[in-house]
Length: 570
Image (cartoon, helix red, strand yellow):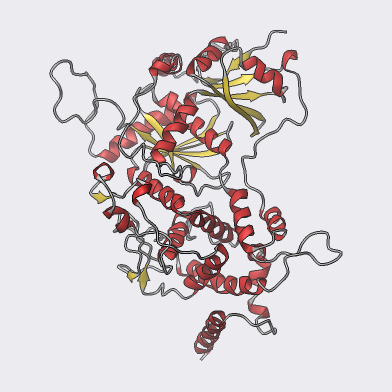
């Protein structure tokens, strides 16, 4: 039986006015994936190619490589698990395959990267459009394909699938309890939660698939991931934030047009840049809703502070947010990536604190009065700047090291900082991850939140400019408080958990990590003990019990808390 790949299709629902859009997309796909000669003009700046001697690269250089991989890739839905060897042999008829992997999300899917775009074009050309009796069905040629069950690609049991979600807290606690040190526990936690190579590739591929739709209106636009998907602090299963970049359109914003031809275009006059953004996202959102294969639950949230289109991409399992005028967020992504690359302890500590915070309900995926992951990350960075000597430099120091290519002013905000790692010289700090974790809890258990604000531009506390329980200055939009949503109750919970966790980890240092004789699993200790809500929430009821001696720092901390509580009772 001849094997075939069927292209995904969606209902037109009588909206024939969008037929021209489909024709544009079809033309773009043939032009964009048909030959390597049609590669979009790369953004080549001095900072893109900056690479440190140890192999560290700028975020823009990493993104360019990922986008190139995504443009040579397809996403294939497999109705049943195919034979891996025969599946690869079938695809190799259309071109050499660089990389492929399988994963599960509402079924089994395969991500396949060809050596060139010619392989993608050949595969799409060989695919058949499903025959339908309903005349309102219009085919949309996409790089999301469906592999039909055929004898030539028979079922193979035990097909390896890459994980796309992180492990549960209970499984993580069991895994950490088997480690031999807190240092190893922190490293193991990071490895369990951080984005994998395959998950990162899938995120860029989803952006590339959406780019094919947006290019019907803006042929030279680029859809880029930002935030946790690329800053190095993303957790498996995190949302996919995307930015529709129109600045890459050639000839745009040229102050003095050259003599010769000018492009004819029409755009209704808008009252503001925000109105333009809303109009663009409204059109793109409509097209994604009608013709985006696998895109469901499309919402156009245009009146938000940052207008966006939100939808679920079922083939990948990602919750996606698309914005079009969020350049400061893009710069913030670069800054966090830079800090994470400067010292491996930065990412390890951020992952650990974020996991601890989620386990105790300090952070939440539901909007509310909780501390956000971004705020928590800034708090970790600030703490690392306050070490003696500092582990990472202040943002002002990074700005002072910047060269001409790094200059950036967005909407009047100074967003300049160095991207070249070779220009950044760190001070020698040899503190262990175990020490840093314990000191983080002590630092914020005693931080004067009622009077002081957190500022990573200067790396030191400053008087709060407004009345808010928690004030964390936005690194670039300095008049904004990124933690303005946090109320006094949530901040008090955070402080109390810091106090109790600092004591718990001190106690765990003196306990053996090995399981007791006859136990089938090791007893939670160290970091694993911090992730158990019962261990922390029950602390207050057990404080009167006699315990082993703790450090003088923790003793004085608990004593001050005791005196404070007695004062309130009076």
